[in-house]
Length: 369
Figure 1 (spheres, rainbow, N blue to C red):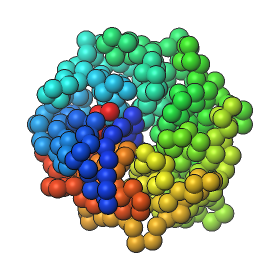
Figure 2 (tube, one colour):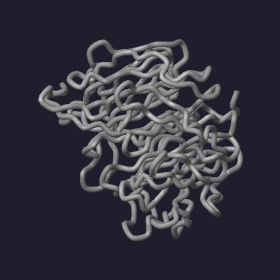
Figure 3 (cartoon, rainbow, N blue to C red):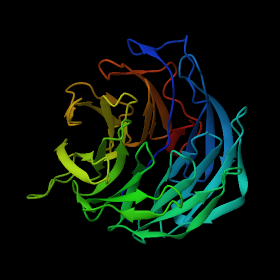
């Protein structure tokens, strides 16, 4: 059992579809074809996405990783899956069959990471991947083979972070990486060398955050970073948890605070809709709550929408949220919950048949680009 709270980070999620009054418009197709869930005993279960409704059809075991995989992400083309295995200090790489969804391990097999990897993200260019390592306090950079998707550690690819780095996010232009440091209450920021993938700390990094920051994301415009605290405890005289927002300096990548909301609540996951108008956070409490926040169009500041949360499950915490366009998939307990997003109000409506399940221990859900 990890000494840290469970955090599932899902990145590189992309769906393209249209909605009206919160429902999927059948005249447009869903780009994402498959959803995958990682089970504690190592199986990865696949679902086929109904391109009209967003509902999921079980595909059974699509691949097998090592025990207790924690995070799934994909290359931008949706042809390769990267699965973190913290207890093995490794990332497993799979090729994705575009017709059946079957996952085939690459010949490179397990690729070494630092101690207890916690987050992984792939650059928009598809050339580089980065992994945060909680127990070695660093982030590792890898080059990605353009033909196979295999990872190779970059020369000098290990860069120090703060204490217990958790999540990481890459801005849409692929110029900057942001890492939450759970023990420090900070966010480290790095500039990406476009040619080599090497990381260099930006001026002023690290930046003060809510205490115990975990999940982190960048809005689609690449102008605002959001990070959510994992703690449910209110500490006198501290930042008291919640969700922090910063504006991004478009030249240097440095962060300027915008504000914090939702204090005194712990969150396991965070995502922004494709328009950048709503932010969704999943509660770390065992109540299955997804909370919706409206985004101020000028400043990027968040306002929780009263009465606009949904309960994916009454007995389990949310482990992951992936959203783009008006479709969302949520990992909760033993299930995957699917929702359409009302593009005007941000309200969530369950897709037909939701929630979906194939096994007794799903840890995280992610959908292919």
